[in-house]
Length: 84
Image (tube, rainbow, N blue to C red; front, side, top):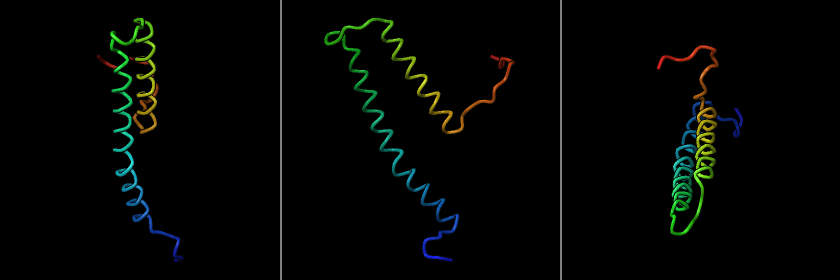
């Protein structure tokens, strides 16, 4: 085995450690960005319409949906509706 080859368990552990190190930092940055976007709701400073707010919220919903799909949360397509 060469020096550069790593066993699968070690590679997996390194990937987990990298995820655990990076994901919280990115979540914190996202929380800060969301708070800053929320600051735009201050009517004393900004003027906006309900339609503009809905556009922003719809984009946020879309981005969350795309993120869920990237993490494997995509539901299989079905022509039948789920029970409510």
